[in-house]
Length: 163
Image 1: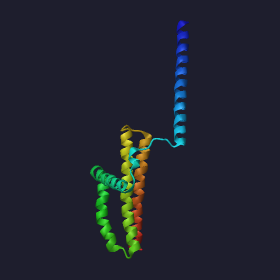
Image 2: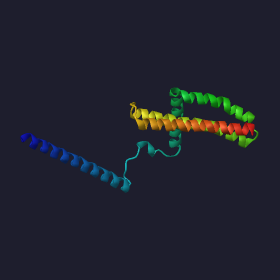
Image 3: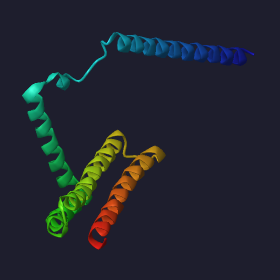
Image 4: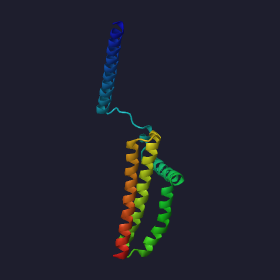
């Protein structure tokens, strides 16, 4: 009988602890909402830069990102090589300025989407290296975006070259 009573007490204690945690979470969320509504929410300390200093910083971060992608991503290096070949070819094969712009734009779009895909993959890997269905979904969707831009490149070039 004593064991049953103790088991019941532990269940009551667990219930009270759960309710206290839930109440604490609710109070925290409520405080966050009030902070957000008042406009006092925390922002990055790097967001305070304005004017020329912000532009210089942004340019430096962009160059760092391109260097990191080139250093760490095989697909990015392959697509840069593709761009080195295709952009001069677009200037030669394009009949007019619009055709050249479309051809070069489709090449640059592949590189842009590859950079975004690499950023998604790096973020997912930063969170966890374990196999998880949502991580797989995020990486697969990023990969699909790159595939669609490559298909777009082939279609644009095919239409502009072969009519």
